[in-house]
Image (cartoon, rainbow, N blue to C red):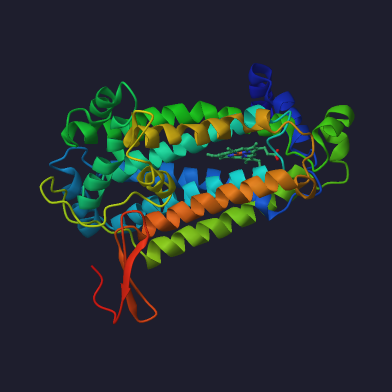
Length: 391
Ligand code: HEM
């Protein structure tokens, strides 16, 4: 073909295509199952977030006066506006949930061990960026929930030792949550975080392709024998594995569409700085950290309780980043890593328990024909019957 030849002489695309074809036909390890599609599912949800986010930008106004009204107009006047917004809102929940599941899959199969330490660290940064997207995005509707959850969330910055007040002012753009806060969160959500995410995600995926998905053999066996030898007999990445991943990703998209249609994202009353609504709490993924703050003593060794709470949330992040260097044993198979599995279950149990306590805190729940009133720490204050209307 003359055009193809013409282009090849200028770009060398034929040799590039041949190299890509050889790379894509490399087999994947034999133990790979549907759980190994979670990374692709995360990428799929991210793509949905970008596409729906751009559509929302056509209508959204990033100012305290206009933000809420612009979303009201989107919901009532723009064809399918409610659907795009609902996809974006549910997509955020599913994206964070998939990141956590993908991370759990990698942990269970020992995929963070050498030579994939950097892949894990970049993944951890992606998780932090994902949480950053979720937090900054939750401010933008500028309804009561957004306003007061931001007030509570940003207050955590104040607890930072030495620079707490300055940090709070930096995050809020002033003493209180207001116009400047919304502007900052918007800039972070649509410009800073996407620009930060892109190179990290690119490097993460490049490393995944370069090193291949880990096998269940020990890390030192992989180093000795080579990844390619251990994958012999596995299915080719393309088209077999890609088709399986596409199937799982489509199921995930189906779930997202179902949720977006059956439970459309709501919009509360416009933000009112003078009226605190009852039961303000962060989204489910921040609940464990939020709840942990409440169990801190008033002061310890002269350090205030709030500051202790702030300091307590740093080690988990450092542990996450340093995991590949802390767990240096070469074993990958879960059955030979009983200690690591027990630790994983402990973290899951603690996080889950804190999340449940956070969900129950300051709530009145009716169950078994009785009314349970839960205090700030999530403990039942009293159990009295018969059931009455919830608060
Ligand atoms: C936008 C977010 C992310 C995307 C799109 C993504 C994508 C992927 C994909 C497609 C794979 C290969 C297949 C698989 O194992 O699922 C992978 C592998 C991997 N990911 Fe992620 N990932 C993300 C976030 C994370 C996070 C949060 C972590 C952990 C903290 C992580 C750690 C890893 C590791 C260590 C591997 C290699 C696993 C192995 O070889 O067994 N990733 N990622």
